Length: 233
Image (tube, rainbow, N blue to C red):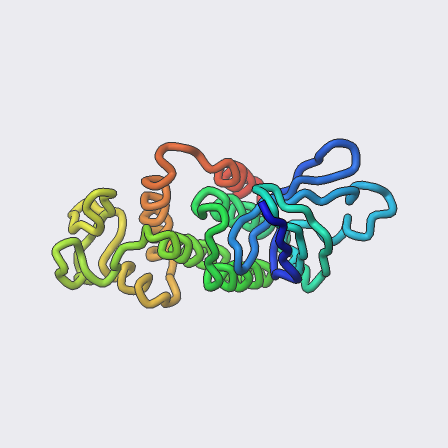
């Protein structure tokens, strides 16, 4: 296969792990090439200038050689570091796991990449963390083709704010007296409006049902850690 190169591609490190004595294997979320695996040689050496750059929640520009599934890092430049704190930090790792679990490798989603940056920025501010997560969950489902029309039910009838609804994997949005979400909350979600307390709780359950349907029973590790952290914060 002929070797090619990618230059100064905006990217975030989703995950990193040691490789041999001095290198790292990186899972990198790029703007124009989706998620790629990159080998960063020698970055664990004491004199490496990249050790403080190749970190989660840091926007970087990377260059790499591309000739097989595993890319070879040739350059990385710092652009901006996002520094979510306490609960927001664990929420950031939850976002990273969602991206890894839902996106196909090498499948670019530039709008979702921008949405991820916006989400990190909101987490750093520490305001409306739950709402920020709900709208990113919705965004990733829509980007992957798993979204549903929130303004109408499966029979194309407009959602009624006075009724309740549930999500069924093979049917979509279904009117259901015992459903987890009200029509009013769905209407707010559909226009990305602020979510008050009751709507926020309903949106969490509704979107978890949608996410779990596509995870096919495989748990999210970061979700379990996040649930434990909430008890202690």
